[in-house]
Length: 314
Ligand code: UDP
Image 1 (tube, rainbow, N blue to C red):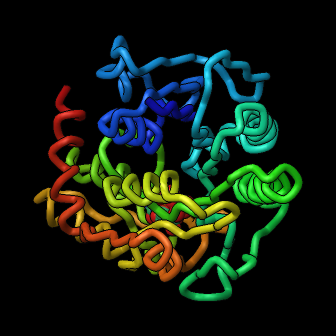
Image 2: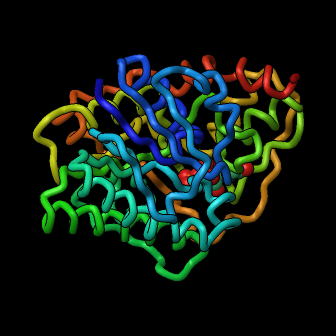
């Protein structure tokens, strides 16, 4: 049986990855300090034979007796709301935490997958964004704590690949949505769904002309799994996301319609450095991984709205 360590395994993406790997007969170890993750995301796994959870911060030294075949470094506050609230912790987890987990990968001779982000492209001057675009990031703005930590981590991954031959793979993850996102995490999909279900005003930042491209969690999870388990991908950097691009205003209209909500749109000021456009070029992922995010936004919303409804009612 192969063993995987998932940092941030109690978070939104991390917990879905736990399920995915356990279902495929892996032994799963999670390290999460629960700052933005939630124990309820993995409560159904606690006590399972092949699952171990440590409440611990990856910014501290990591030691494991057992073999570890694969490390997924997915710990990190990921919503702008969260990382602006925890700027220093965000920088530590994707600097010290990346160093510690790469050091562990070196000592255990593990494969290593890093959760990077479309934010490495910043406010892009190229559209759609492909992996060879170097980005356009404000190094001192409020979002820089996330963007620059992710960029630093990518550089550190490549240094371990080049100097120590560690089998690293970097996933640049674009906006993803699904169950287990916190209702109050500030990201646009859970925010709009919960506002719509409560018939509260939908808070649109700016005019809502900014675009994003949203990937359904199961498609993303499958992409991460393939990136992690396929051979001969050492040193590869791959965009993962769904290229179906739409404006935030259109997203608001869609959510209101699907929830049969009485909510009105409320326009608020645009956050500093909020990228006006974002769309992944996934040609590389299609070619290398056979990645094919088949769940449309409309279908994905239909699948998750009942979960959010139940969450609000509970
Ligand atoms: N957004 C919004 N209202 C909200 C939350 C977000 O209009 O209540 C916008 C935000 O300004 C951004 C987009 O939705 O342009 C996506 O924001 P999110 O926080 O989900 O992630 P980002 O893509 O900015 O990292």
